[in-house]
Image (cartoon, rainbow, N blue to C red; front, side, top):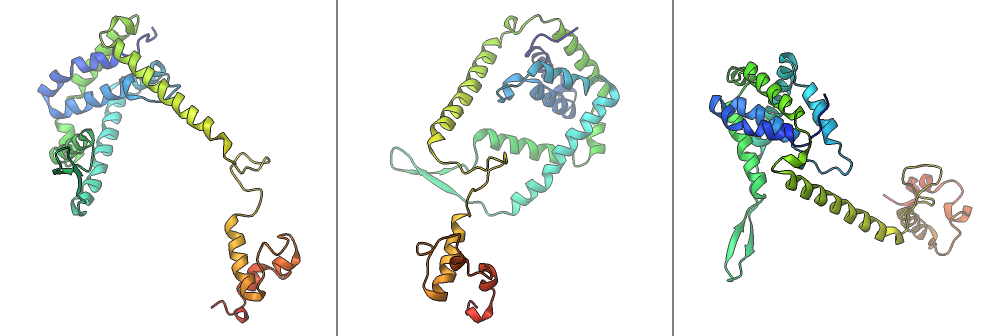
Length: 258
């Protein structure tokens, strides 16, 4: 039986978040992570195949062994941020201010509210679970596995996204993603007038001629040598490159470059 709804699995996981939280914070953490990972409105790729993505996600967590592996990876990601949090404690905070309409000044937060909330949650996670042993003791894997499988079975029975309450939210999200990429394409198209230096023999960007700064280096060198500049000489001529090689001359101590 194939999944036909992008929203169903995340929706049913979301419905059980409160119950999981009542059991333990660790259970809630894992279920919330799965909810976010299966929520189609969290993805902003233009060609994202969410049904296929969710089916692959479920195959990674549908047994006790697989779920335990997912949980260990989740904890490692969370605990890996400990160093980042500790480093930020020692950094000097740069305060910025903005002027209000009434002329008064207010301290401007360094981060958006959602980013600040995420950082607070991460700090709380690290505080509550300093190591995996403590985290695993607070988990009920059998409960989580049973809940995940029940949500999946319900999701498979869902015929389409249209029958779900947040279907309009998904539609609006897809419109936003389409608009975002349409605008990016428009900007890219408007920049076509600017020259792009590429080598036809290679897909990677390159220069057909020597980089502009090389001319400046050679002008400086030759001007000190005998007053010549790139405008006075043919760039391909031996006169400009001084036969024995510009960079060999540049390293000659007799040229007084040091």
